[in-house]
Amino acid sequence: MTQHFIVIGNPIAHSKSPEIHTQFAAQAGIEISYQRQYCPDDAASFTAVIEAFFQGGGVGANVTVPFKQVAYNCCVARGGLSEHAKVAGAVNTLLLNKTLLKNGASIAEAIYGDNTDGQGLVNHITSLDWPLKDARVALIGAGGAARGVILPLIEAGISDLTLANRTLSKATNLVNDLSAASETIAKQQIKTCTTDQLSGAFDIIINATSIGLSGDTLPLSDELSGHYAYDMMYGRTLPFLQHFAERGAQTSDGYGMLIGQAALSFERWTGQAIDVVKVTEILQTH
Ligand code: ATR
Image (cartoon, rainbow, N blue to C red; front, side, top):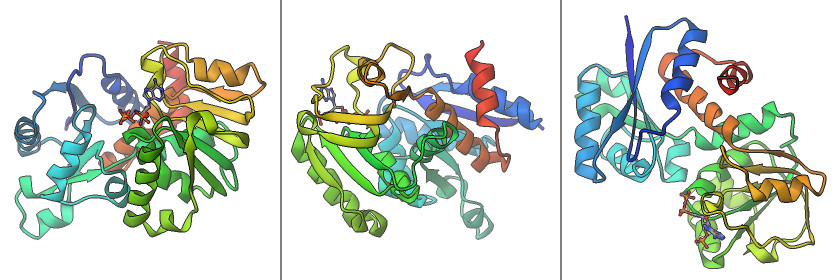
């Protein structure tokens, strides 16, 4: 029987999720339909679309810009949130909470939220054979993208985390917020600084800002060095990666993170693990 999935966003025409999940399904030998779902940019419309989807027999949904926080609020009031979604303050994966359904909840009451973005990053970095255990990591950015990856990075065993941002107060507020939300994060002494003050030697430097979209470049110090540089953006020439490649670092854009987070969503929904490296190769040759 065909299992139905959607990705919901606004705009949504550019989403690569349908082709990614179609490849996963081919690999897992499962019959699926996976559609792009446009939604007007307001919480009431989002909730109506999601409820109708699950009530119509849908198995799972991905959530993208601008609805990740709306989806979080929707799940708080319904089927609950995973630890990663709680700490990220955002949801990218929706499914039904089976325990609640068994206990008599309605479908709308059982809508549950998870967030696989951060673990998708960790899994991709691991698949590149970049050492995360005991790594000294610098993370640049203090918006939603940075927020979502901090707990998974700490869980992966990094030794040291510095959070840099153009606006320092946003970085310190984020650390305070996350430390209040998670004991694991509170135990990690996260340092903060402005992006131009970020200096010293790191194992991995990660760009979680949206600067790649603007064509601007980050003001990086000559005193900053890294063995590996990762940009969570993908699909264009990224000056951040060029900067570190010219200084001998290994680099990667965020395409593998996109596939990694999708694979984890697929696994939550179907119970099937995906060979991410193989699917990435197939999709990149398309
Ligand atoms: P997202 O949810 O994608 O993380 P966001 O919440 O708008 O998006 O956060 C964007 C991040 O990129 C912020 O850390 C922002 O820095 P500020 O907090 O100082 O605004 C960073 N950013 C965006 N454009 C930038 C630029 N031109 N230079 C430096 N940092 C930039």
